[in-house]
Length: 258
Image (cartoon, rainbow, N blue to C red; front, side, top):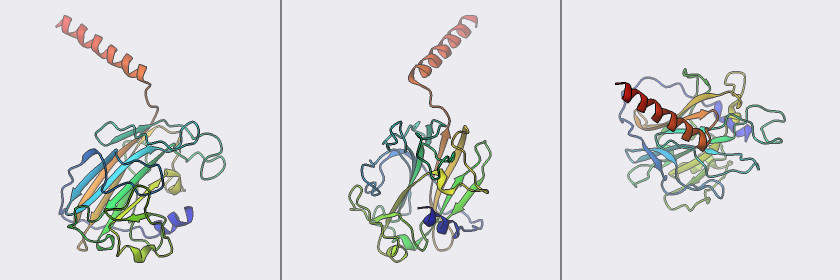
């Protein structure tokens, strides 16, 4: 996986400034068309989606490591494009390298359907830009590259009838297959990109922006989706209740004083 990712990073693109051909209108808590086709047991849903010009782009974050090291279909979405997970390391023994602190317990997952309604083209008809923020503060530090148009990758490929988990993975013939398919997906951890330039520590509380865009051959933006992942302690239900009660009491006191 690391070898594939490294090759992908070498094809990072420098994008000029173009007049937008599309204005993103995100819709939340969505299924992507037709299904989630990578791996097995990965359910559809929870995606922040933009559908324009025949193209559907979806992003979501998901719990990758629970206390038993098992992935879960838990998205911790606020229903408006933000996903929150604890800023802790997975159970011992998991991580890209022994003792690594860059393994988040969450993955971000992306989906590109270049003809979700039959009006678009094959994947090779467009260019794409994935931007991953590595600055935990309110500022951003984006690693940006085209995740689709690469020489080889372990992405899952399919079309609008591919069943759940049934995507084709063929890294050897991947580039040629982009002419034949309109759906590509993958699930990534921040650790895959961790290096001296783009460093990530799963223990550091922070907020990370992730954007995915599609462009025509003239560089005009056709569709774009974006999410925010909050890497910080998820409040327990009782914490939320206490907070709500405290806020209600404060408002009631202020009303009496008015």
